[in-house]
Image 1 (tube, rainbow, N blue to C red):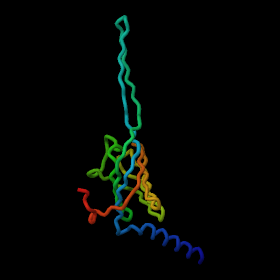
Image 2 (image 1 turned 180 degrees about the vertical axis):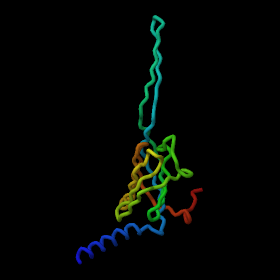
Image 3 (image 1 turned 45 degrees about the vertical axis):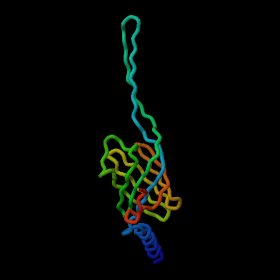
Image 4 (image 1 turned 180 degrees about the horizontal axis):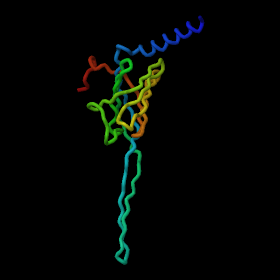
Length: 159
């Protein structure tokens, strides 16, 4: 009997954390910055006094710092994110810049999920509900920012 009561209590706690945002869209705008991974290449040519020549191409990766904004909305187990453009790889999906957030888990202290950018790139999204911060990290780079609630229906335009 104790086991059944404890199990029911755990199920209710889990359901309340998940249902906390269900039917009530949470829209956020997060300002911050990070670094994006970019491919680089360089080409070199050389000639010697005997008329011989050589060339080389060197490829690598470098981090490019940026400041930008992350927008997202979550409603129940559904969500979409608009990532900073600098973090987007050349081949990506999305719908008008918005990407599906999959595997959303909502607790009292954080919301987590993965942003489906393309078949190889699924950055991990972590929203700290207590601090109001966001972290997005994956193959294309990382972004950290501070979030604020955004209500599209009641927000005033800046100009």
